[in-house]
Length: 258
Image (tube, rainbow, N blue to C red; front, side, top):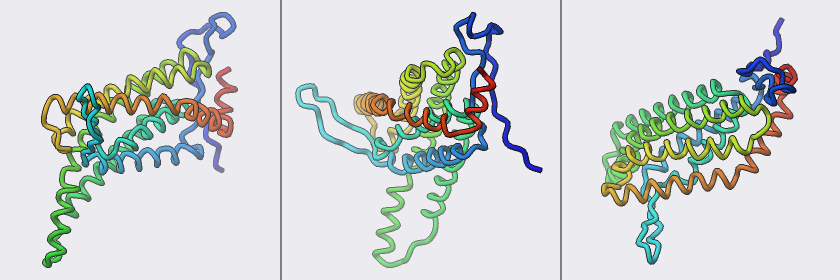
């Protein structure tokens, strides 16, 4: 006879009751086996794979007049903030261990994708002019992706770890309160670590060689990613609150923690 998953309630660091300490008696997390975790993890994996492909292309939007600042980024710039938004949702609902599991899943599928690209490149093409031209194009497009994947793995691992750690520790202190503050604090720190590592490793694959171009690429990437995450924090918070309400394991854990 099957049994329902047991909700988790992590005990707080202080034995005092919330009435005397002003802090929550426990921290609630939904069970990973509930219906939304697999969907969120799947979205994160898809975004990580697509970002790795897109980031192999350098993008130049022009130069800001007057200050000479080149607007340099990569083809995955519009996708990657979504991975952090999904990571915030997973951490808040399911905890840092569940977030770490989703990150590892993203690593595995991204490495598998990079291996598949190299196999596709190694396969013999049609010997006609069209086949050879397509082979050359595929080599140029997918050949450097493994470097971008490596950069993404290093940056995403470090950045998401910082992001999840801040989210979980702030939740331990505040319980259900302070969600907006957690999202603001974690997003900025995680994106800073991620952007510096990613841009440093991936720069050569994208075509960035000078220190000045690297600095412009890194600064713009960080500002853009944080700006996007901050702009959608009200939406992220609304999604988190909705999922908390509709997830019975979270509600059970919340009742047990109170």
